Image 1: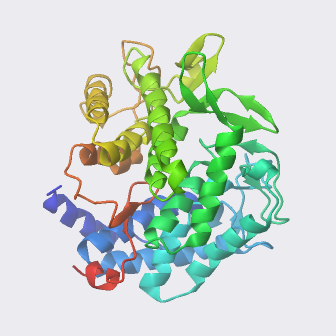
Image 2: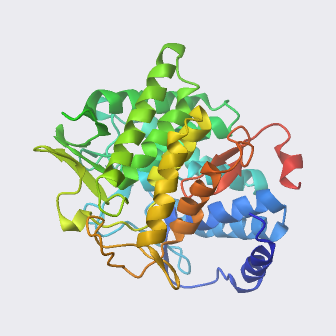
Length: 402
């Protein structure tokens, strides 16, 4: 983006002020996708050694999370003592979360590649081994798994929060491996078929959505977080069986259209945190506690993938609607803020600018209006925080320094 001065300033900060000898707890998942993902990207895009060294050191700080009987990591790690624990809210502290331990693969493979230390790759390969072996209800992956027993802790399945990026990392592992990781590919298409069979619905008004599953009972709602799935399905359509490719492209377009409707049906033209399909109301939040918008990226992420795949101008039009809505409702003197209620024409700001707004929402909007060769999907895979990681072509080592 030609922000060279800002980059130099940030690099100096990472070099001089980003210390890892701190006491306190950190989220394995968030540190991995935001910090390690960001450092890896910065290294691959610039070749600056400081980013490689910091990423590896930070990766080493996360390793104690994996000290469990199954090797499934716990969600929280103490940087000073090396102790680990699960989140207190996750089944009373007994569970690890599918989206969290399932979204380490991309970064950890690069950590092994850049450090020569096999431990990172071994940790994530073991996670996959556990998931392959375990019995899955109807082929679905529940969101809570015990890192002690290796059993599911309940049968809640979601392509939104708690589950989302696990599925994304399967197809992206396949793409990042230059299409050699057959295990990831097979697991992805099998999971997608189970999702389609058991969670996919079409509303009376003709909107396609992915419901949530609780022990066989469906909640007819979709979270904003689940709106990444249109882009994911589009990304995976090309490598599906030939007879399924057109079907997946159409499914991706339909889900993305539903997510656009959740924006179009609000007064601010921004989408709520969750929206329902029940009793004649479709693609709208049904209570205030789900009506907020915190600058989330998932909908524009899908627009970007669908645009790159189809070049249908509707996706740029929809993206521009979001730009205008952000300017109108979320811009403040000091940056951008989330809003409490997308259905109120007078925005009530939450006074927070989430980091993913810069990392993802604005980046995907920028890419939506860029040429196709800017971070082309032939060469780059985005981690779930939109940090680009190189596809492992045979010449990746020479390109890393370029």
